[in-house]
Image (cartoon, one colour):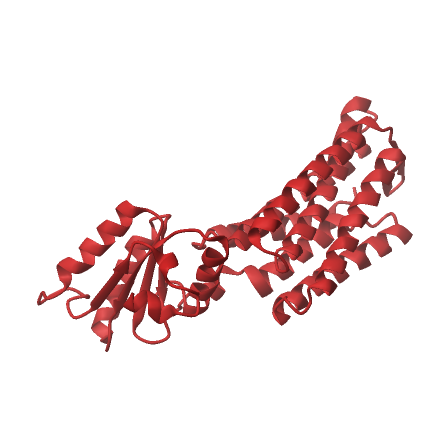
Length: 336
């Protein structure tokens, strides 16, 4: 069976899934979009493998099962193309508008998926060549191509709004996909769609979505760049949050271990995000008023004491982080 590439792609995506979930992320909108693409790539590759296996053994299986698996595979391919479009579009429009676009894309995808299940399909198996044709395939490829073309158009239209690194990643992703489809069109023995999706997800992970890039390597908390991204999304969406600013100057080497322990303990809380600024400032953000009060009380108890890592720290807190006018005004959080 010709499933070596699909299995390789599936292994890549499963490993990426493991690495991604092994680190705490900030729950950003773009992170959620990427994780859904990664999950969908795994689903696509599983059905890509099942597609080949069921056709190889179609003489032993009910025709309706073979047809169901084949059509579901086509739909998973359609879905990941749609998700690629909405992922790239996010860099060009506001979150509120983007959510409306997602609802429209979901509605369109559901309609097309229903048509794929309804329309007839022909399945061919000639030696090592496995492929399908017919109205169901035509409509699937038509709308999948529409989403890919829309992704490329979106990337070009909003190129001045997209950061160069992200634009490069999107470009490589689209090139991989287009080249794979062209090769597969001329050589049907090569089933490259799933593997191309895996390579695309790998590119996104390495260049854009690696959680390690948001971490302060010394302390294990999030870094300044992550703080700017986190705040920008909250300000754009108008999402309320609480913040504590801790000014801790002249951190001694013997205090680093205690600070790491503090960060490790609180980072286990799903809704607590600790950031280290470039200077001597820590910013702790949460959306839970109970956790906010508990953190503030924990730090205040150490102030003025003879022991404790925050005994000489300055604490400023705000229950309304949106009172700071923009993500650039980091000092506003600390001194609010």
